[in-house]
Amino acid sequence: MPVKINVKTTIFQDKGKDVIESSASGRFYQKDIASFLQYEEEAAEGSIRTIVKLAEAEALILRSGAVKMRMPFSLNKELQGSYELPFGKFETAAVAKKIEHSYNAKSGEGYIDLLYDFFMQGNPAGTYHLEITFKEEDNEHS
Image (cartoon, rainbow, N blue to C red):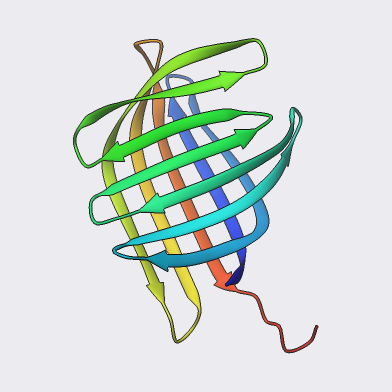
C-alpha cells in the first residue's frame, strides 16, 4: 500500500549531535512474518532506493542506486555490512541497541525505531537513532 514516510536520523558523535530529516513516498507491505518499507530519496549523489525489512528482533536496510548499502541488525549483536559510494567500498558493522516497529492497520500508521552503534572500517562512527514514521496515503482526494 502507498504510504507517506518521514525519516529522522539523529547521529551522536564526540562533537555533539546531528539531525537529518527527510520525507518520501513509498510502499509498506507485510509478507510472512516480516514487514517491508520501500521508498526512494533524492540525494546529492543521485536517486537512492531504500528497503527496510523488519522481523521480530532483526532488521535489514538495503540501499541501491547512487549509494549501495547493506546493513543487517540484530538486537545486541555485532553484524557486518557494507557501504558503497562511487569512490569506494567500506566495511561497516552495527550493534543494535533497540529495534522496535509497529503498524496499526486501522489507522494505517506505523513506525520504526532503530538505535545502533555504527562502525566504519572497524572504527566507531557514532551512535545512530533512526526514527521512521509512515502513514497510509489518503487516496480519497486523488
